[in-house]
Structures are given as structure tokens and as C-alpha cells.
Amino acid sequence: AIQMTQSPSSLSASVGDRVTITCRASQGITNNLGWYQQKPGKAPQLLIYAASSLQSGVPSRFSGSGSDTDFTLTISSLQPEDFATYYCLQDYNYPWTFGQGTKVEIK
Amino acid sequence: QVQLVQSGAEVKKPGSSVKVSCKASGGTLSSYATNWVRQAPGQGLEWMGGIIPMFGTANYAQKFQGRVTITADESATTVYMELSSLRSEDTAVYYCARSPILLGPSNEPYYYYGMDVWGQGTTVTVSS
Image (cartoon, rainbow over all chains, first blue to last red; front, side, top):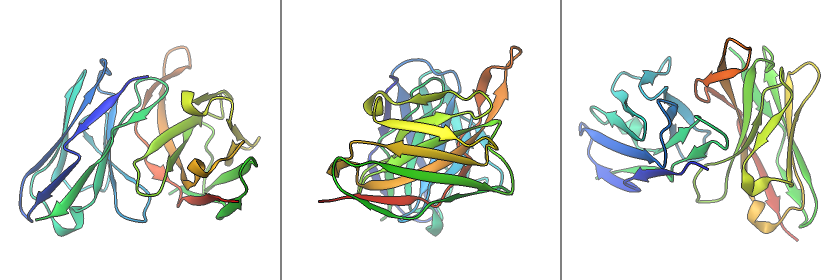
């Protein structure tokens, strides 16, 4: 199975900060990668699919980049509602696998 | 807009089975991949398996092979996930989630567009 290594596992940031989260695949996955946001007690929400495509309704401060094995989620200016846990997911081949998650906390 | 509505919370004894349903309100799941993802208390997300009803076959994570079965009803409006031989470590919230698919030239799944619609989650508690 493809392993997804996400970093950091947690970070503290302030409103207005630029935040970057990375995900590395154990083998090439072309651009078959999505990013998800999860708030406590809620189902995850799709932010980015196909590595860099913004899901409908998601604010443009979220962006994704990368291909093959290295991927990045960037929040250009962190807002209060963005404090949450973020996960990457590869859907290149079965079994699909998630990264371990990155918890974004308020500094 | 399609919504996924899951069945209610379950409390099960170790060694028993649980079957969770995921019903599409306002559409069908026939040409989508419907996946099951679970989250144990305080832990991350774990993909368990998925099915594309129009093809009928399911794929499972190795960890759950032999214990999990994912099926769809004939109308493809409801997908089920059954987990057997339950143990305390299976206590978790179980989510279903839909993935749009791009079909290839031979009508095979070629590309997935992320899990764009999620159910509300079903809490399964395994306790003696």
C-alpha cells in the first residue's frame, strides 16, 4: 500500500499567517491527491482534488500544488474558521490511504 | 444536491457484527465510488473500502480483508458496510463518502475527483 507521510503533525499559527502543510507519497501518484479539512465532531470536507483543483465553494485562500510524490496545501491568510485538522488522501490506487493529519491551532 | 444519510448509532458486543447504511437523498450512487472511512476516538481518518455500484465489485483495505463487506442495493441509492468479528478497537465513527469518477475509454474507472459528499457519521461502540 502507498504510504502518505504528512508534516507537520501540528502547528500553531496566528490569524493572517500563511500556512503550508506537506504530504509525501511513498511512490508516484501523479496528481491523484486530495486535501480535507475536519473540525471537531464533524465530517471531513473536501478542499482540493487532483492536487490543485479547488472544490466548489471552498475559499480561494486555500490552494494545492505538487505532483508525483510531493504535495503542498497552502492557506494564504489563515482565518479563525480555518483552525482544524487537515488530511491528505491518495486515490491513485487501492487501497486509498490518508496522511496522519495536521492539526492547526491558534497561537 | 445529493446528501448522504447514514443509519443511527450502534452498540455491539465483541464478536458480533454491525451493518451501517448510507442512503443517497436526491440521487443515486450508481456511477460514483462510495467509500467508507472510520475514525477511532482521538485518531486520524482510515479508509476501509469502497464500491462502485455500476460495476458491483468492492475494494478493501488489507487491514479489514475478510471482516468487512461493502454492498449496494439494486437501485444504488443505498450502500452498506458490514463489519464482523467486532472488537473494542473497532469503536469509532464510521463515515460514508461519495467520489465522482471519470470513466476511461473502456468504461473502466480512470480517475477519481476526491470525496465530495460525506454522510453525517455513525458511531459504533463495541463493549461487553
